[in-house]
Length: 155
Image (cartoon, rainbow, N blue to C red; front, top):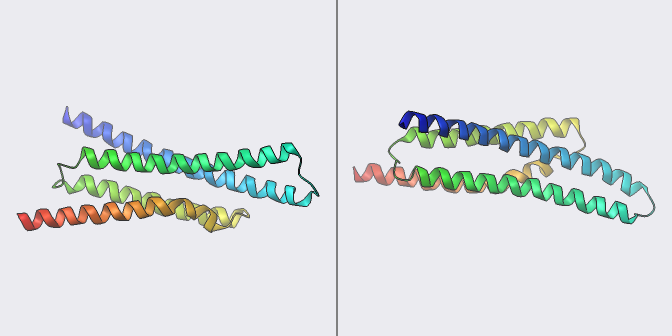
């Protein structure tokens, strides 16, 4: 039973990473489309009501992808740490989480760099999405390292 639960947890973690990358890719595509449309809108002498609605809609979609990215990151982090809070001695679980997120962030930075080379979207517009998760990630990392140090001192 325990092996089945670990297998399911691994599959959920991989699904989570795929969803995070898909959300990031969708966010980048929306930024690219918004930038292309802004060039069109800035070349016209006036904006119609339809243009204003479209601008608003793309802004909401971009914010939606950003919010889903943040919410998914925070929820997965909370669930992961609550589920494994009593099992701090099992460092493989902690390593799996942290190594996975480092890999996710590195892939996102590489994708941002490639995307910024291929499109007119500046890399900082794409990397701003990683600012909050990276900050939370570092706080979790410090918390877990502190907990591991405390366990080693207690033993």
